[in-house]
Amino acid sequence: MSRARRRHSLAFLAWAFFFLCVLEFAFFRNGLWYLPDETAWAGEAHYHFEHALQEVERQPRAGEFRVLVVGSSVALYSVLPSELEHGLRSHLRSGRLRLHLLAHQGMTPLHLRTYLNRLLATRPDLIIYPLNPIDLKLERPVLEGWMEGLYAGHEENRAETLAAYESYLVSQPEFKEIAPFSHMRYYWRTLHRSLLAQDLLAGLVASYRYRDFAATSLGLLFENRLTRGRSYLYYAGVPVWGGNVTARGWTGREFSLPFTAPFREQGLLLEAPPGLHRACALRGIVPHLSLEICDGRACKKETHALTVGWQTIPILESGNWLKATLSCTFHSEEEATELGVRLARNAGRSWPAPRDDEREPRSTDDLYAAMNEAAYRRSFEERLLNFERPGMQYLHSVQIARGVWAGRAFDPELPAAAALREIVNRLQQAGVPLLLINSPENPLSMQWHGSGPWYRTYKEFLGALAEQAPGPGRLLDLDQEFRMQDFYDYHHLTYGGARAFGARVESALAPWLRLQGH
Image 1 (spheres, helix red, strand yellow):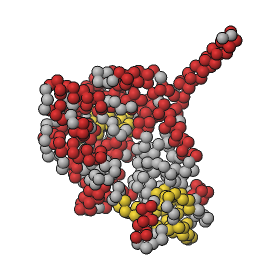
Image 2 (cartoon, one colour):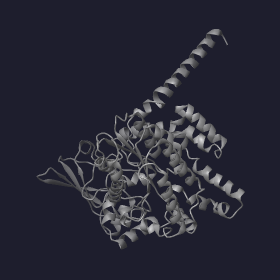
Image 3 (cartoon, helix red, strand yellow):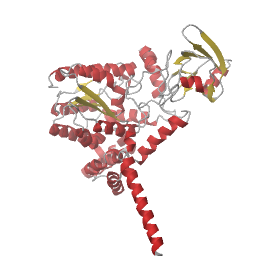
Image 4 (tube, one colour):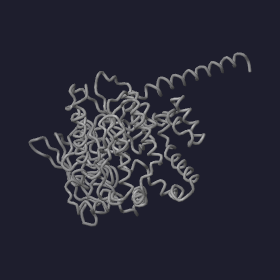
């Protein structure tokens, strides 16, 4: 190779290295986290957790009393942040209190132990931790056939089985994305060498650590601006009146919308599923949408035929709000109720809404609240116990596991128990108060294990931990304080259930907060 070509090659490598360094430090370590988080409520769990945690890490405390609510989707569904923040603030002398919800689906005590260094670095004045048996992942030993190794074999077999159980729990990708070095520190004995290498690389190279989060963030920015929002998990559009929508964006027979600029310019985008057309055909009805455009004085009515799939309903008149009525609805087994059409993800919004941990009440919240016990039982069985339906394997495994564990005493050597002890010890050393909550459970699923020795000894274990922790000093036990209608499923609270949960937490913390010096 000639000297000139060698110089060009070295220059190219130098520029490539410089570009990668800029990408590493300017984008992955910094710029990525200043992009707006446009995930819908409860969506993209791990990316949102990291985004929210980095935001808290950047915020100066400025003399505020900082409360962190941590946990799994149990915490996410149990807390209405602004309501709880307002309630707790009223009991603090200074009135300066900020509450941050840092939770993601599937967070076990082993996750929380791994994240604890970062959480403590934000200098919280109180940590609230709602915990449910679902967070211990007790279904895994049952499904994997590990119960015999845990309780019927020799001590050596038990140790190997516990190690395999822990290895499963800590092999999820979010560990290396959120706290890679802590992941190595706590679980190096059970992690495969390839996972340890990934942790090391993730801790050193942000572009490797955050590559999936970058894809999520940029993908959402692209989808929210350049697509119509037809493929999504959680609805994030304008408020829907007169029947509301489900969390997935499905309407009932009637619904109303504010007449925003996007509706005027682009029309109303909606999906009419094949099930709706079949239901209409069985009743001898032509599927159509009656649309009224109202301005406060009068309403102008239009009728539009519905075809299978997504379609845009043109809106030719102007007004203040839209009122829609469908000619028929279809029965959804998943929701155990009658549904109509599905709205686009960002329906009616000129600009995508940034992520807000304030969940909106949905039609299912009102539906369950209005049911008597007999109606709710029927709904519960159709939605959650019809295990022949696709996608029901997890809920079925939870039911089976509850029955298997119910007759045993709680095992304090399980990985989650060890992690909980470590969490409490660390908080003791740091002097950070903890409110540990035995999170409520649906009375219908509580029947599977609530009267057995496992649940009794589990609560005793939590109670002993809560007494060791600094702060309020007792377990807040809410396991039997809620009606079945307050739950979507086994353990996730409805909007009304979350409001009641917040009131219980506020009541429990009020005497302690009044004694604080803030």
